[in-house]
Every structure is written in structure tokens, then in C-alpha cells.
Length: 307
Image 1 (tube, rainbow, N blue to C red):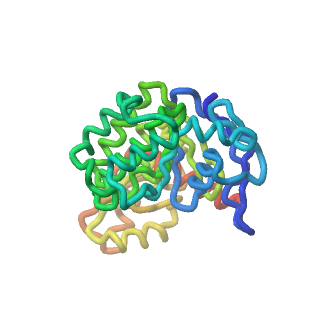
Image 2 (image 1 turned 30 degrees about the vertical axis):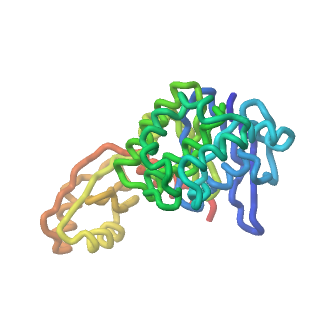
């Protein structure tokens, strides 16, 4: 396996950042670690890239143990942290040459690997990195992470704060890199990006909630789900959460996703309730569960267990 974790735990004082994490990422797989800020994603990435030592458990990357063979791992992985960490005062070309030199290679030697990405930033090769747009910084960071032809690529929330067009382009680049037999572990808080992975692990409060394909994750949602909208959206949230038949209700785009407690629920009853609460332009439609719906339901169940 390219990445193997066995019972990894890590605490900061009394806060448990990771709690008994175990999973495997197959060679050539695009694997997503999906969860909100504070879920433990960055701590896990730092352990796997040998920047942090776990309290318990073991892990290996590309066949190397993270504690015993940390130097080998550093030579065989690429890491793109969540925060832009290249040298802001160096130009695009100077940053890339610097990282190539560190790994004993040259831009020319591995140019084919980064070509599709580099051609997009080459017109700005003499611009300082700190003056680049968010999307261009992202592409430069990815080039620097790839310049030594790594076996495994770690991307920690690479599209946070990036515009939708650049996000789409970035994921297209990842799909092309995957075809070059690079194993990719990417973390993201965006549930729509989870759909683009081969498999995903949902993580919350340092615990893995579920691991499976995106399609299989969606089918785990145990109840019917409805999208609800009225002209008074804020009041709708309050009224749905006080409705006796509500299992869960939370914002989802321009609608609220509402899950009833029982299978015998009738949508017309909810409409009558909302009319009594003086709502107008009422829409109640059954819909298909998303990965986010499953994540919210699993998170809620996890919170109840831990109370």
C-alpha cells in the first residue's frame, strides 16, 4: 500500500486532535480526507510527512515507516500545505529552481511531469511569488511539490480561498497527475470536491466517521430527506427546529435540508404547519441525499455518543 495508518492518535495538552485513526490508500488512488476546520486533517498530514510525531499507532508512506525512515519519506513525497509557504520574495522561476536543487534534480529533468501546470504560470516566471493571484500561487506550489517526481502527493486543503474556476482547473490537474501513477491524498472541507475522489474518509473531531466511495457514502443516509424553502428563510430555520417531527434541519444553499423522525411523515403536514406559522411561497420537495447530508448525520450521531 502507498499509505497505511494503524491506530494513530495525537493530543495537544488535553485536546485529542486524532483518535485511533486507521485506513489505507492504494497505489495510484486519489483519496480524499473530508472534514471541517479543526477535524484533525492537518495534524494527520504533518504526521504522514514526518513533520510531527504521533503519540500512539504506526504509519508508513510508500513502504517507509514515518519514524524509522523519515528521510526516505521526505525524498519520495510531495507536500503542499494549506497555507502558501513558498518564498514570497523569489520569482516563480527562482522558487522552482530552488526546490529542484534541494532534491538534486533540475526543472528540465522532470519538466514533462509539471508541463501542463507550468505553462499556465510561465508567462509570470519573473514575477515574485508574493505578487501572484491565489490560483497562480496554488499552481506554483503544486509545481514545486512535483519537481522531484514524488511517489505520493499530499495536498492539505489546496483549494481553500481559491475562486471556482481555479478550483475546477486544479482538480482537472489532479486527475491528470493520477494517470501518471502518483498516489494522491488530498484534504478538503468542500463536500462537492469529495465527489471527485476515488474513495473518501469523513473525519470529525479527530475521528473517522466512514470510509468508502462517494456513491456508497451517499447511500448510507438512513432517512428520507426534503428540501424546504419559504420567503422567510431565517424564520424557517427556527420553525423547523421547533417542529415536533424534525430529526434534523440545516441550511443547504438556497434551501434547508429537512429530515423527519419517522418514515410515516407526510409532506402536507409540514406545509400546514408552516402556513400556521405565517410562511409564504412554501416549497417542500423530496430530494436525494448528498455526501454532506451523510456527513452531518454521522457527525450528529458521533456527538450524541460522546456526550
